Length: 125
Image (cartoon, rainbow, N blue to C red):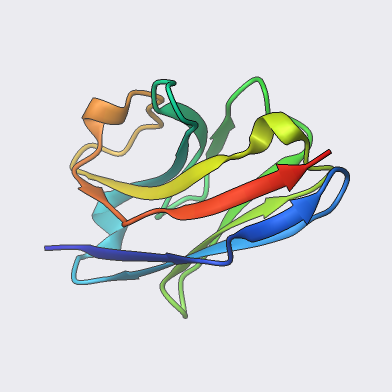
């Protein structure tokens, strides 16, 4: 059973940067793909970024490409989301997610087996 705990959310202004962290425990992490999703009020959960734990391959959603960077620290069992040039439309609850089994990058929330509790990011204009 994998446990995921996000941290680092908050209130920022347009153009600011922020880094989210996800502490991962309880699993054989080389068997997992990790991801960040977000959900704004009244909207569906949206793919943000994903990374394979073993090899570090990455993928990004179109709306964050070039502004956000996902990474993982194997020694610390942490996944990070560095967010630069934040915009009001980035306002959402951000979730860390883990998918076990065959290693591939997926943008589909239903493919992920474990979820954190979420952390709120609000970007003011």
